Structures are given as C-alpha cells and as structure tokens.
Image 1 (cartoon, rainbow, N blue to C red):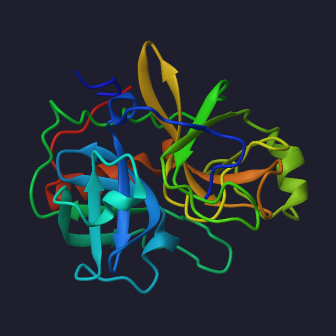
Image 2 (cartoon, helix red, strand yellow):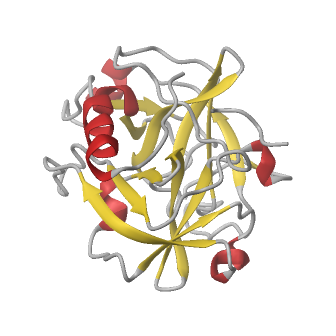
Length: 243
C-alpha cells in the first residue's frame, strides 16, 4: 500500500499523472464532483462525514483513477453499497467528521494501491501533502485538474486557541500556511506524508477559516483506527494496509 502504481487546494500545483496518487478517490453526487476520499481497502473509501450529509447510496458514485473533474461521468465510477458515518458525528462542530463508503465491487489494488493507515498512536508530522479538486482561490471556482500542495502541521495549542478551544487533540489536527491550504470541495480528501517510502494518511480534510490561511482542521486518522477497523471487519471492506 501507499506506493505509486506501475477545495480545497490553495497555492497548489497540478498533478501530472494519477499514478502518483493512485489512492485518490473522487466523490460524485448526482453527477457532480463535490468531495474527495481515499482508497483504504479493496471495497472501502475513507472520507469526511459532512460530505455525506443528505446523500444516499443512489446519489453517490466514487471515481477511481480520475485526474480531471470532467471525467466524473466516465466509466470508472463505482456504485456504493453502504455509507457508514461515525455514530458520534456532530455536524455543528465537525466532531468525529469521518465516514467510510463500502463499494459494490472491489477495486483492483494492483492498479490502484490503497493509502497506508497510521497506527493508533498519535504522531507529530512534517512535510504533509494535501490533494484535491477544490477551489484555487477563496472566492474562485473548482480546479479542473487534481492539485497538490505541501502544508506544515500547526501547533495544536495555537490552532485550538484560534477555534475557541473547541478542538480535540486525539481526534483532530491542524495544518496549513498563508497561501497554502485546502478549500471548498477538497473536503474528505487525504492529508498524508511519506513514511518509510510509503504514503501514510494523517488526516481527512474537515473544515477551516475561509481558505489560504493557517489552521485548517483535519480529522486525525490515528484517532479513529478502532472505528475504521470495526467497519472493515463488519462490512467486508477487504484488504487494509498498515504504515
């Protein structure tokens, strides 16, 4: 897992080939890309709970191997069998902002390797990257092509103060810098780094203060390993890879 195969992005650069990030998923609602996600198992897509507000398995498709938004209606779309939202998700404060989509059919992991998952132990990160098709300016429009940008992890105490001490260290992390951030429509996408030569997911794009500012907030994947493991075991999400 976590290897290259054989909006909310501000200040990013275009990704030239999907083989760089084969685990990236495009969430398509009623024919339009609205969120991102990541392949974590052969039938499981990790994303944000708020992306699934008001959506059903009938309105949701998952695009795999897609580089451009214009491909959202291509044949590379997977039907969703189940939507599993964290039982303690709180919409008003984005607590437990995580969900897993179980697909109808398996993804070929030889062609699209999943991203690695971190251990349950909380970690500090450097050299993080976030990718997505979100806005390229706070008042702009979607990016047609998948974008990437490197962002630093923020000091949690400073970030928590920015958000009125309303965050949870175990379940959330902060990242971003002036001019480098995720933005609208990047929600649900992965925040990750390379550990031992493999891409390991640190966070899920959750929310922020406008765009292109510090202190974007992400659901901390390590804090939800029990939830993820339980869903995969119960719903048959398939093979899953550790960092």
